[in-house]
Length: 422
Image (tube, rainbow, N blue to C red; front, side, top):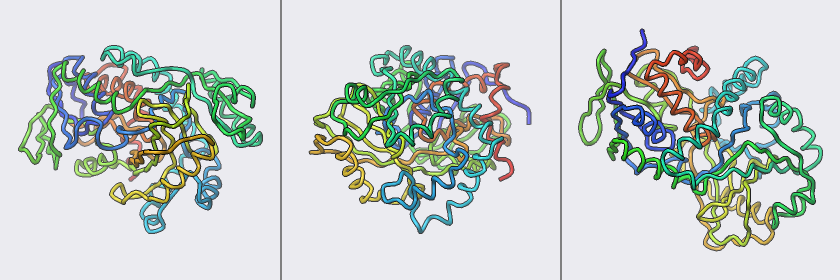
């Protein structure tokens, strides 16, 4: 198959109106493409774009599957408050994905994934700031760094090699002691005496506001939104035909940015996309009685805390299960209990609880790629925890691929063909 270059003015359909789909639409429209987004829900309302932690984690250059992860995973699974959850009835179905996940922890695969993520991270802050500024949304972004908190000195020491690697990659950080933590994070339990402040980190005031704002900016650039589910699509040598509940639509190309649903569209097109639903849980306290000036990561608990417009949001964890499975109410209760232990004066009155399915790849590297089976099909999906973090950079890479930019060859690390062994 030869690559088809789509000139400015070509019509492109995007399946999915989350942060990835909307960012892609906005950047493509700015380059002169005629873009239509298809989603049965309004922009940002479905999936993890609605109520995630709002972090722009630019210094997170490592895949989740690090060397020794199998021992850590077993420990987490055995703890009722561990960050990893797998419902017993779904464990067997998850085995193929976790086999690929564990393979990433091998030295050569870990290095490959780290390099791919490091490139995205090197552009993240610059690209995100540029996109939001162009869209008139720069007031939604703040960069105060992020404080990683460790339960013990032993845990901090175990993290040192990772911070050294980040420093070598250009991501600065500084250790903080108990007095500095107490000064900068008033209201937190005095248990925390060890922390690292990562400077290359930002946050948004409300992730849903970002998606909605980008959707408005995209509309002003000519992007159309069709509130309908895409049931299927068929490609020819000259176009793509989408079948929806509202009828048929023809475009020059299609971009699959449907979150965990992307695997279904890939399979229908003859491609293999190993996406798992990594379900995260959180709560948002509207009147918390606690004010944070910077986002927090509780490194040993798989939890984060962020001050949002809607209140203090605390959550995280990773439950690998069907996206259609009802939320586990016990997890909400556990996060509430843990949150009050972390912030003794936390007020959870009228707190809202939410669960979203993050589309995760076994190597933690998103797929930003043309299909090997059709030069009219592109993918921008599988960002896991980092959809908001890498949305702008992914959109720019995708635009390069679609427009046939010469530097597009350097994006091979994000190709769907890396899973060609099935």
